[in-house]
Length: 308
Image 1 (tube, rainbow, N blue to C red):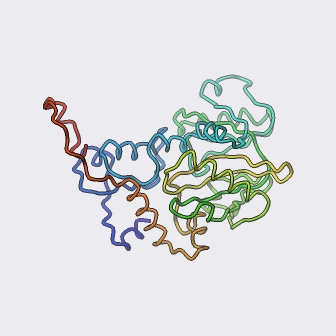
Image 2 (cartoon, rainbow, N blue to C red):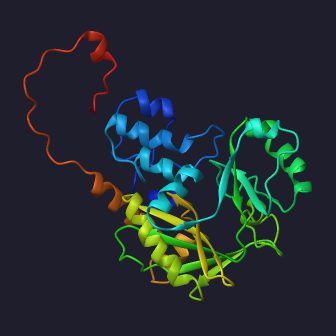
Image 3 (cartoon, rainbow, N blue to C red):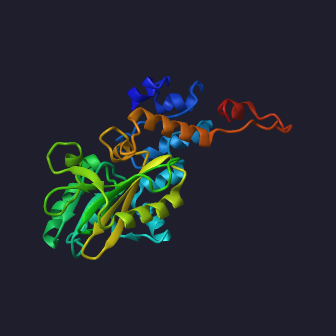
């Protein structure tokens, strides 16, 4: 995306969170590249800083972004919107330490705040649980909570949404995972094996996914662009909300771009639309003349950003 921004004439200035938080406000818009920081809530940092400095930022506000980054919170919002979700339970470090801990049936374990299908584990029986709990207690996860999610058989359907485009105008995509259970993995998405494919889809479940996406999008808008993920079980006709990915991958191989390309929209045009729409919706009108007020203390004035 950075090359697309530069080709469109944008001046792109890389900066650290410290520079953006405490440095001069010599930028008009804050665009954060999707990161893989290990600490929970890292995707909320940039929109929170943007709000603190009073500058527009790509994507949703920090509170709304939390719905995207926390899989448990997202499911609660989905239920409030009338969507079906898989049964789920938080798996904490205390559960890992409990001998004999297991849940009956088949489950998908993944980080509560994870991205890109990282560290996904499937357990099908009581015998699978000791190995799964050992895996999630790996030091690289730094004690983060995981979520155990009821395994729903069927298709992986993802619905791209770009705000500013007509609602429901972007097609549903089907993502195919590994053989047997059709589970999506980080390795497959990264092309490290040949288990992952995606393609436009208008078969059974597509209309239901579009309807569920519209209902969920209404709860989290504005967000500029996002992708809403579902599992659809053809046997039961059950459409299950999995998660929403706000400010997700928009590269030429992504479902977001490929769905737009079906309408003849070029990559640079999509990037320009998203950024323009985001900037315009956050642009503030002329500030009213401030009312006379007492002069703040020097200590308070020193730590108040110039933009606020």
